[in-house]
Length: 247
Image 1: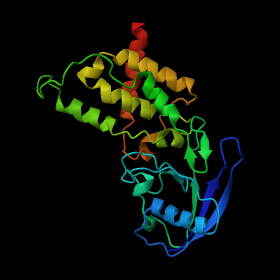
Image 2 (image 1 turned 135 degrees about the vertical axis):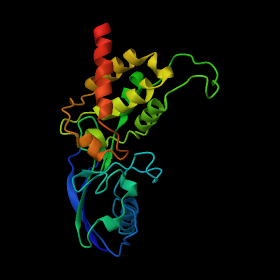
Image 3 (image 1 turned 135 degrees about the horizontal axis):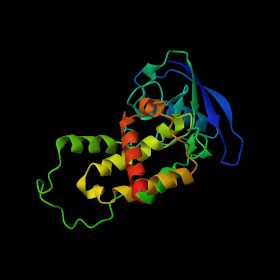
Image 4 (image 1 turned 90 degrees about the vertical axis):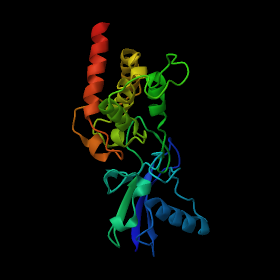
């Protein structure tokens, strides 16, 4: 398979970027998208040119670092998958593929397709943790937790913090990310103790970092590689409003 790649190239955060076109040929249909970029970079290095910078780590759909906007979709043409889980058979032979970094004011470009997602780390540091002492690990059945609550907590905890929700949202909102982190702890007794403080602190930090407001378009849920439901946003809103009413 042969493709034309329109890739965003940007030297650093202060430089003006632009699209550049590249040809890749004889690509197997079973090649992953990141492997295809590896092949392109190998060709560029042999030509004495600067390879394309892009994020990657596990390449197993776990870490969420492979954050690329492909043909206008976060992570590319697939549902419930990260970029590294997209294979070239998803594209037509001879297609032109447009590849961009996340487009969000809170995720400034570092170089080419690499963005700084440190804003998510700051939100987590503001409250996405349990700080109360729980002593040693209790016996498995010492604290009964309803299966529905445990399942919901685990579903929310599946968030990999890739940033696709904010990059897809027309408002640049991080509500799905924050809501998933709040839900993953709020549904468990260990996290319930600090529920009010957590909701207020994480929402305040999200606003401080310049993320937009949620208008419930559902785009975040549609492009989330872990298919996290926007129902968690409703829970975050309830947690936040209840905390504010207590104040």
